[in-house]
Image (cartoon, rainbow, N blue to C red):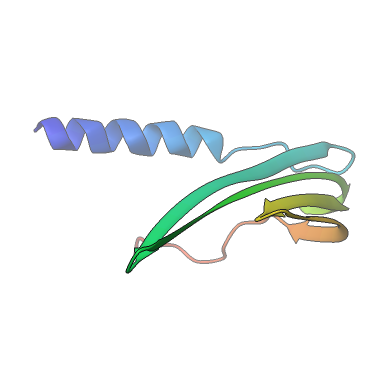
Length: 101
């Protein structure tokens, strides 16, 4: 019974997040980040590495459900740093089928 209540709460929580404003003229701002630390030891020698990444993104809805924008990226790993700026396009729409018959 307790697991069903938790599942119901999770479904309600995540379904309320899925109704965003995807109409023409709106902006969308998002991003990702990553921190990865690894260590290994091979017969007397040890090695470690740290990777940090940050990727912000911004877009503008030029039509209902279709946005264009820019995505920037910063990646630092083992003394190297990589910067990039890329164009992005995304479509947010509904799937045209139903799971209920």
